[in-house]
Length: 115
Image 1 (cartoon, one colour):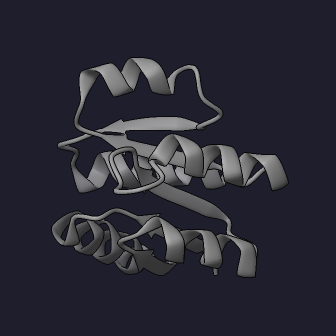
Image 2 (cartoon, rainbow, N blue to C red; image 1 turned 90 degrees about the vertical axis):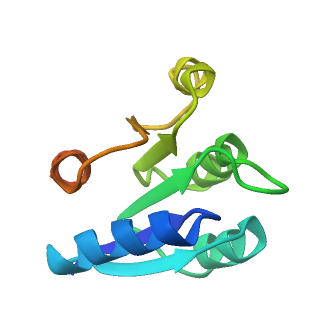
Image 3 (cartoon, rainbow, N blue to C red; image 1 turned 30 degrees about the horizontal axis):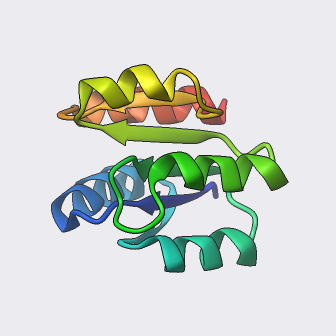
């Protein structure tokens, strides 16, 4: 089973993404903060990380850099901000998912990254 880590400070987004992926057969761990995310990233190997950009303290771009500095784990960045979409094209993220998104869009991108 594929292990997916979700990082988002919005409970509703974490819940929607988690339920969608669990229903599709993925093992999901979700966190709402960067401190716990870094601990989780450092504690085990992940098949995929999905992270919001706007996270209190350390942001999504820094999480991507942290992951990519030590692994080639694919990372999907979620954002609702247009400027972040442009900035994300210059990061190491594998894909940018613009909010709002549908479950079908999410699953299509996840399946592509894990293929």
